[in-house]
Length: 174
Image (cartoon, rainbow, N blue to C red; front, top):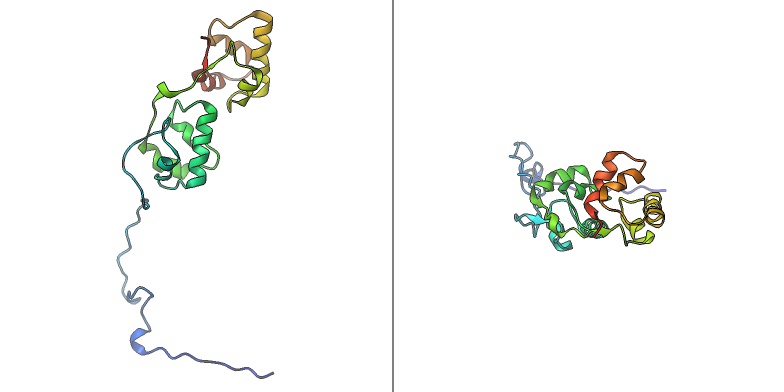
């Protein structure tokens, strides 16, 4: 087998230059790092009424992640706190920390569920209400009648007060 080698000759004047024409022997000033991207807007975003395009305009949020945020919000019935955006599956904490200052929440846009009329399936579809809690709510209504206030839910859940604090903004007895 015969090996053939080819050599390329580079003229002296081009040996120390990068693709962008910056001389490698000098240390160029670093380019400014900006988290902005095309279409990036500086306005605040109201998270309970924003569409996918509004979320996409935020740093680090692409089409799929924006759709997940909107889908999670819709399943919840709306966000009552900005930190809930960070609970969305796939949102890295580093990205959430960069965008949270641009988010605002209108709690008046939250859709509430009537715990005296919601079916087991409706309750169980909520991301914060598991099947056991949904079952206990329906069972309580059948055995003892309607709830008089949302505080009665505390008696049904064998969880911490944190769980109750997460679900109570989505419940009503009207």
